[in-house]
Structure formats: structure tokens, C-alpha cells
Length: 382
Image (cartoon, rainbow, N blue to C red; front, side):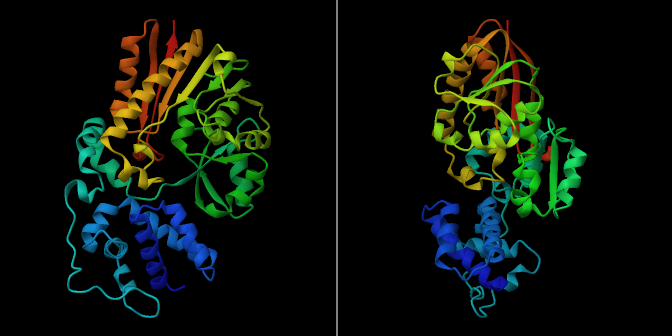
């Protein structure tokens, strides 16, 4: 496919997305219907689609319309020389017409921030607001977590390099590598197949490094999902590990991943029957505001009502987690959000309604630190 044909394909996919189809589904359906497209073509079309979705407001302004064509035209106008893709040659999109002049986006629109979220994000991020929102318009780096229980970080770099994957140490976590080249080779690499490295954001790894883990501790990952933080905790100490998720299907791959990493994890439906625990990690459902680079659709789908409902869910999970922690034990509260109402303010409300708990440490990470946006608070039960 020519670059112009790829742009046309992205337009078709985005039209489906605007009709309500999830982007991944729309891309899969397009690929099945256009089997002539090679892996490079599919990857290029996917990149355009997600570049556009990260910058949907500003692309629509530059392109003159909230349509697939308008969005891709706006994306093309935002990059030096890309508007030449709209030349009408072969399968390329037709040249812009008189009614497609577009305009320069301003304010929150230029930063691709939903209007209703601008004030709470400004209040949460302070002087970093504009820089963080600009960083969220870019693609997220690819990070790996080295299983330090089995391999040193430098050895992992060398092992990956032997298979054409360039990775460098990242300062956000002792186990973190940033992949600079060959990212699509990672999951076929020996290091990945043997459980020596896992795909995991650097800030997510840093959250686990904040937890006071020691050999022999009984630890529960209460909202385990796919188990990334479960496995990261296992790599830090010899733990007795349990994992739970409200939707057990999310943990479907965890036993295989744990076996690959050489880790024992017990999946439980009722953690209350297995407790109490020395440490409970509650990586709660949240707005996902810190991971909008990876999930730009989540940014545009979030509503005030949904955010309010999430805050209630978070409070309920914190209370449940607290009851599972033994006296003297630790509760780790984490989100992938940048919003203080889900982070520090949520912790303050917890401390106000529950006696005997103290806050030991808390930290917020933003894309300016290199990884996704995360928050973690470590609380100890008296």
C-alpha cells in the first residue's frame, strides 16, 4: 500500500470508530476485509488511527470536520509534508476542497483535553498541566520489566540486543527498560518466552517498588487484572501471593504468565477466606487519565457521572482492602489517574473515616517522568 492508501484506510476505520465501534475491532475488521494489506500496512494504519484518536479535538479543528476524512486531514496538516498524502492519486484521498480549510485549535482544544476536565486537571497538575497534556498527545514508549529475581538488567539488555531489540535502562524503576527499536519482536524473543522480561509501563513498575515487600510476606493483589503488578511483586521478594479480580476472566492468562516467570500465585474468588494479609495492593478501577496515550478512546468516553461512580467504587474497594490487612500490615492504594479526586483526596477521605491508619508515603507519576500517569499511596494499619 502507498502512504496515501494507508491514509485512506485510516479514514475508513475512523468512520467506523465515530459510529461507535471500538478502534481495535474496527482495525481487525478492516484487516480481515483487506487481506492484501501486509503486516507493515496494518501497523501503519493502526498508528495513524491511534495518533488521530490521541489528538481527536485538534485534528478535527485542523481538518474542518469530525469525520474520518476530517480527522486524518487534520492529522496530515499537523505534520510537515503529510498533507501531500491527499493527492487523489491511486487509492489516496482526494485533495482538500474549498470547504475543508479548517482552523488552528486553541486552548484545551489544542491540548486535546475535554472541556469539562480542564479545570480538575489544572487543579491536580498545577504548573505541569500544559506540559503533561502535550505529552499525552504523543505515543507512549514501550517499556519492559526485567525479572530481577532471575536476571540482571544489563544481562537482559544484551540478551534482547542479540535478537535485534534495542533497549536501555530507564531511571523510573530499577527493573525498567525502554525499548528504542524492535518493539514488535519482543513477544517472540527468548527473554520474553522464558519469563525474563515482561511488557509493563515504567511507572507501573515504580508503583510496585514503593511497596515495603519482604521475604515471607502474605500478599494479596486485590484488583489483579492481567497480573502485571502481581508478577512484579513476586520478582522483588519471596512472597506468598494471592490474586483476585472482580471479573475472574481478566486473570485468565495469569497462571501461564506466572509459570513462565517461575512464580507461584493462588487465584482466589473470596480473598476474605484466605486473609488476613501482610500487604494488600488495591490497584483500583479509575478514569485511566494517566494512560490516555495508550487508551485515547477512554479520554473521550469518560463522563462526569462515570467519574463520580468510579470514586464510589474506589472507596468501597479501599474499605474492603483495609479489612483484609492484618494489624501492623500495609495497604497499597494505586490508580492510573492524574486526577486528585481519585488520588490524594480519596486517601484523605479514607483516613477521615477509618481510625488506626497512617499514611507512610504517596507519590504521583506523570508522563513527564517518562511512563504513564500513576498514583500510589502506602498506608499502614496500627
